[in-house]
Amino acid sequence: MIQLKDKTFEVFLSQQEILNRIETVANQINEDYKQKFPLFIAILNGAFMFASDLVKNITLPCNITFVKVASYQAMQSSGTVKSLIGLPENIANRDVIILEDIVDTGITMDQILNDLLQKKPASVEVATLLLKPEALQKKVELKYVGFEIPDKFVVGYGLDYDGLGRNLPDLYVLKEEVYSL
Ligand code: IMP
Image (cartoon, rainbow, N blue to C red; front, side):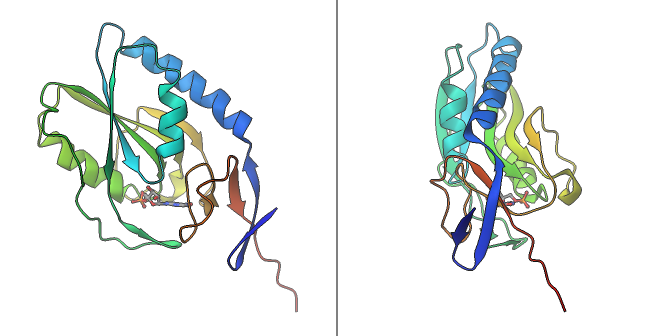
């Protein structure tokens, strides 16, 4: 168990479990994009570890770039999504694969997809490490999903709680408080 500020978290997925699953997802991408030259766009900050471990298993010629979108404050989705920062201009006719840490409400991914599609890529698919199916509010197509998880707050492996915990190699879930009278 770990303590970050006022919250206690417990291990939910070990680094090894995460890496095993990422290898499977990467192999699927290698298969699906044979003869292609994909452009991976990783969403900072949260996806940096996922992107790093995924692309190490990609055997295709590829480009990797990073963009930023700030839409989340502490433990609640603010609902206001800012536009993408650092999106390359030359994505027309490219086969784009977005790398995201987690899809929660789907609002961020919906916005990202809308922004990207305006640049006329040949195709866009999403690879997200985590998905909270119960929290989804937008219909977004997610071709590659690492793990479907319950609608609970998680940290570690790139994800943060108020800026903390991104460095943790395992993924942790918020420990439920037990209230007694
Ligand atoms: P969405 O727009 O609600 O899908 O939120 C997506 C973004 O919210 C992710 O890229 C994360 O940065 C953040 N987020 C959502 N759920 C969690 C969580 O459980 N832990 C940490 N960050 C989260």
